[in-house]
Image (cartoon, rainbow, N blue to C red; front, side, top):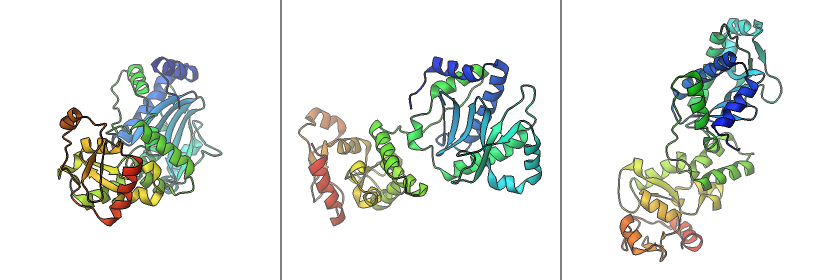
Amino acid sequence: MKKLDRNQIERTISSFLPDEEYRKVCLSLFVDSLLEANSYGSKKWGAYCYSGGVRLLVGSLIVFTIHRKGLWLALDKQLLDEKKDERRQLEASESWSWGRGEWSEYKKIPSRNGYYVPSKDSQDIWSTIRVFHFEYIRKAAEKYGWLMISSQGNHSPELIAYICSELEQSIPSPNYGVAPEPNAVEDIREFERANKSLSSTERESLILSRIGQGEFRSGLISYWKRCAVTGCDSIALLRASHIKPWRDSDNAERLDAYNGLLLAPNLDSAFDKGYISFDDSGEMLISGELGSDSRNKLGIHSGMKLRRVEENHRTYLKYHRREVFR
């Protein structure tokens, strides 16, 4: 999706929210939901502007959209069924209408979705909507560890800056940690296109393995306990690296702890790019393309080796030497 710059965002939002006062009401409610999402963690949400509106996502789900029809919102179905009086109050309001068609509900986390047209003078029904909407945000935030990787690249800091200026208030920005490399984003998008038949849980687990997180990272930490070469035990600094690259592996290999090394960042980068590899006994091989000055600065030298190698590692190491090592 093509990102819009600050001027394009301002023009786009003004085109479907031309009335300044109404625009500020809509943006204020959007920020209300954004702050609720952020309360569960700054890596779980993202927001962007597109030609038809403004969206807030939590995990893998769109939970709030501003567009010409008003505010589209996801409401928690379970709570709607429990709070029948509040639901009747909602349905009696002329400001609310249930959505129809493809986006009328979600299955992953059961919802009923609809449209709210706020009053410029009052947010009378918002206090009722807010309860059901915030409960849905809570469930989405608890289900997903962070915003779907392919959506992280769509998040728009320019949108956040625009809203801050428009409302004259401070708004937090998400923090996803280390940004996924461009190749990872492309790998994940291709994987999602080709694996729609997998359950959302299976897809998420495999996607997390691409960026060295989730089940894959946990398995490597359990196996290696420290850097596979240096012995560094600062786990938070170590990276979970596939031996046979993720894009070349099948789904079982992508989660196989034997297809991974827990490495210090300098070694992880050199290994991923093929500047180092390992023989079947674990001795480090250093590419001639990595000059002596770079080796010294990276702390890479002959004599380094994997602290252990098992038979299950060797097939993956052979692939790395043949296909990745320079």
